[in-house]
Image (cartoon, rainbow, N blue to C red):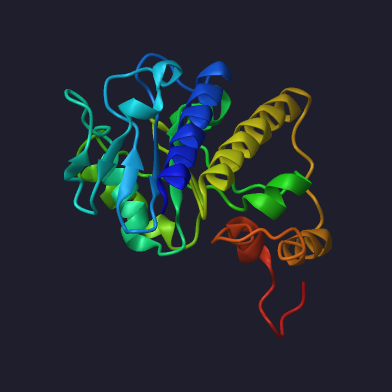
Length: 238
C-alpha cells in the first residue's frame, strides 16, 4: 500500500467516526473502528478519545495480536480491540469492523430482543437476521468469546446490554450496515407503536434474498432464522 493509499484509509476512518458522532451513535469515548490493511496489520481508533475529535495522526497501527506497531506518543488502541481482532481471525472476508451504540438498535440489545424480522426490503437484502449475542464485559475476552459463534453466519450483531457490531469487506460497507440497522430499528419501533409490524411473505423474502448478488451484496447474512424454522419439512403439508 502506498503512502497516499494509507492516508486515504486514515481519512476514511476519520470520516466514518465523525459521521457516527454526528448521528448520535456514540457519546464521549464510545465506539471504535478498525480496518485491515493489505500487509496484514490493522488501523484502529485509539482509546479515550471522542469520535468527534479523531484525526489521522491519532490512529494506531497494530498487528494481529494487538501489539502497537505505530502510534503517536500516548495513544493506545481501543480497549475493545480484542473484539475487532476476533472478527478478523474468524473471517478472512472481513476488511473492517464498526462498533457503536446507535440508540434505537441498542434499545433492542438492552431489551434482549433480536431483529430476526423480515419487514423491510433493504434489511433483508443488505443485513439479514440480527442476533443478540450473550453479555460480555467490555475489554475482556468475554466479548470475543460471545460473538465468535455468531460471526460464522452474521455480518450484523446486537451486543446484549452494550451496542451493535457490524463487519464488512471494506469500511464503507461496515458503516452502511450500521446505518441500515439503526434506521430499521427506528422503523420497527414506530411500527410497534402503530399496532405491530406486518411481515413480507415468504415468497417475496426468497426473491429478495436472491437479489443480493444483483446488488453486489456480499458477506454472511443469511435468510432470517425464524423464517427458516417455520418452513414446513420436505414431504409434509403446510
